[in-house]
Image 1: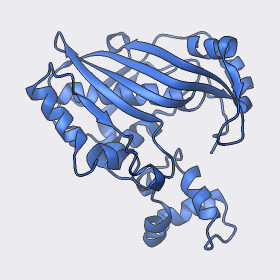
Image 2: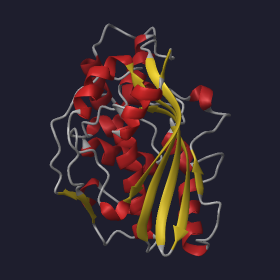
Image 3: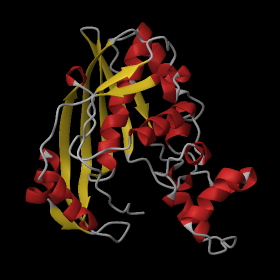
Length: 284
């Protein structure tokens, strides 16, 4: 909410790639102590199911939306649908019809559901390097290292991606037996995207801490272009009228010892009592 107020008070109007228009502010940092609760917004309901499935999808190395679609997660559908709409194979299908084809037709999904070498590919295969595997090995064997890094920003493959990474660089830090993570996000849709990003990387930090036998420290969120789309202003003003509540608690299956073994059923959110969801259209 402080970020939203900062953008409204100090930001400037700026055109953007989508043609929607934004109020933009450059360079902002938030810190979340993961010992104080799980940082899932309480001033509007956030769809945790989508966050967990997307994170598991990144970790798996997959770049095809079929896994997400099969689990009724819609957050990545717009980008492949727009690519399909511009193709010669497009037959005036609606978004819903496109998604149904992804679900039921494996060949269609292979051709039109892939986003190119986005997050999962870079995390698990950046020029042949499994960054996630190496990160965990380094945390376990050399926790004082200043090279505990995963980068999703691969300039050689940006042109192949449906959407270049917005949350593009993370660094981990071990101190006093606690694991912290700082994320650099080049571009941040504050109303729709940022609540997901905060929860996703906080959860990712918790998962890595567990498999490395560490406690949780902080999630530090550093943002480059932090923006509110002009078609989200009413929603932001509504949200700013609400009062934040006590943060929920995230419980994870303590028996999971490998980052690659987590399943959706291993997560349990407790005491989440948010205000009602506020809808907004994603800018593509």
